[in-house]
Image 1 (cartoon, rainbow, N blue to C red):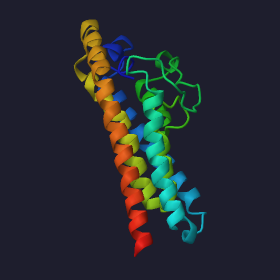
Image 2: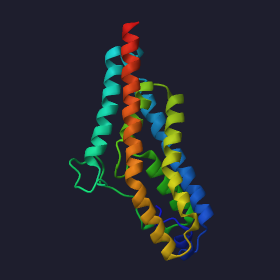
Image 3: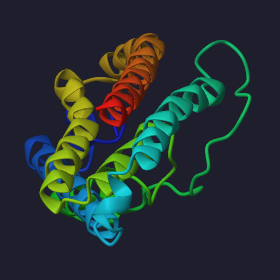
Length: 209
């Protein structure tokens, strides 16, 4: 989205960047809210006695750690070919919308699809982790909070393009994004690993009490 939704691109399409970005952020927020609420609703169908059991709690923690490992194996940013491919739709947002609709229309449309997470190409296991955690909670309120944060955070990088008014600025931004790709991956992997370890620790502590 950085190369598509920028002041440079919006000016070429005679649309306002601020309007498009606002719609994009709102769409991504709504998409995340929908995914989180849906996951939590489905998780609520599982009996609470099962979802809060020691076995399920430990399983959730272990899966989070495994997702972190899978993210590392699937990463192309370490200078090698990915060892595995993440299970995912092979689908992107339709870029033809850029020339077909008004800025706020494709802004909302792109944002909602990316915020929902699982209807376009999945490049990080953090998407699966979000679905797992909200489903495990079985609480739609938790799903809305986690899903809303997920959708909003996914959209925020588009704000980095606010100063892109010419082609050279866009190239600099894309180069900067490339440099930050690996550190961002490490943060995601570390966060998943830490979350998994905490869940396992809580499960073990609960089992000992």
